[in-house]
Image 1 (tube, rainbow, N blue to C red):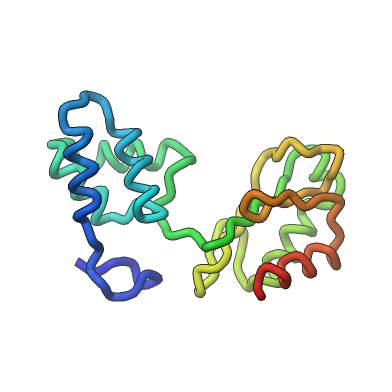
Image 2: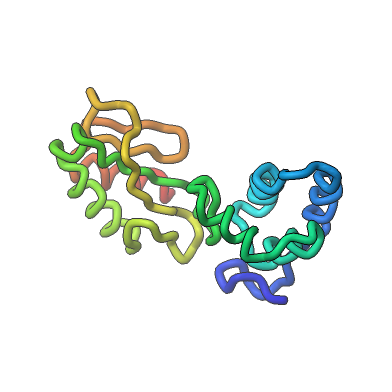
Length: 162
């Protein structure tokens, strides 16, 4: 099987997953922790991994996909090295969050919810980052950036590109 085109043509290494499945084999209802740890291994949940989990746990693959798509913590596509989250909560919304997202999209040549072709950045809107007094706010990885302007947003993204 081929991995996602973004990951190249190499076959996905399922050995770490097989060890993980063995760890949870005797635990009933362990699909969520199994998926969480699988995502730690690959950075997302590749289709090949979900199929292997289904096969090895004697679970219908549609059930595995059901869990993986129900919970927002799970990703079915690769994410970038840097995760950019733009707050769109009330305070950020009225302070210009939409424009901050647009600037990020322009700088990165991707849309909200997408990952750059070089797998360096994933852009996403979130409901609240809990930094209302700093609105508008974005987080890049674990760094919070507040009181953003177009110019400051561009400057921050360019710094991360270096």
